[in-house]
Amino acid sequence: MCWKEVLGCLSLSVLYVGSLYIWNATQGRDHPSTIKKRCISVFFMTIVSPFFVIWWSSNEYEGTGKLWSQMGLRLEGIIPALICPLILTFILFLGPIIQSHHTVPITSTLRMYLDPLYWYNTAQNPIWWRNQVVAPFSEEFTFRACMLPILLQCFSPAKAIFVAPLFFGVAHLHHALDRHRLGIDLPAVLLISCFQFLYTSVFGFYSSFLFIRTGHFLPLFAVHAFCNHMGLPELKDMWCKPPPLRNRLLVCHILGLVFWYLLLYPLTEPLYYGNTLYKL
Image 1 (cartoon, rainbow, N blue to C red):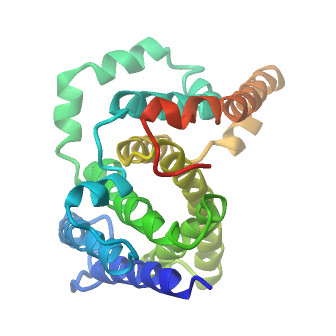
Image 2: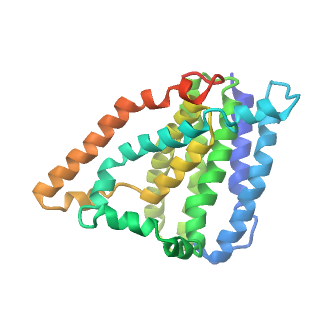
């Protein structure tokens, strides 16, 4: 029975979501004031979360070295950890990447990303900071780097990668409250929330897999930020294209999935990352 570990993760999940609602924010989740307040909350959670690993751990931490290693905060293998999982995720999004550039040359996008003015303007947007920096960092730190070491004391790695994302998916259901405040009718809110639960849980499986295979936190942050940048694949838009273009895009989506599956284990070989803590 893993009730103690599950209780620890449940408590951490409730505290994370609850910290977002301690403020009297009535302007909506995308208002700069709300974003700033919630960023303060999740900053507080990055300080508190490691204590949960200690409190619910059966290990004695005489120093911080072993604790940080279990949470994926280490230097050994850091370079491949930042490169290989991102390459793997680029392959997974092969179809959406090509689809988004079938009318706009990829060179134009690269020039935009290399333009300092673009990054200066982007840095003025609090929504970008929330979606690309604060949310990926705090969510991966709490729901992977801190929860998985707790669960792995009781669950096998194969089971842990399916249990941990459930807390992550449930934690995103609070967005239903934000949508309801915006006036969206209840049936639509429930449908969107169920879809979001499935989507976040599937991403959680992938992120948990990367953590256990690499033993690193930083690639989870990078992959999460990239996935937030890409968003959901525009399958409806693809299906509305003329048949020749639609068929080519469909092939790209399928090839991306196939090559991602074939490279999933080779590109996450623990030996590349110096990972001796976790085996899957």
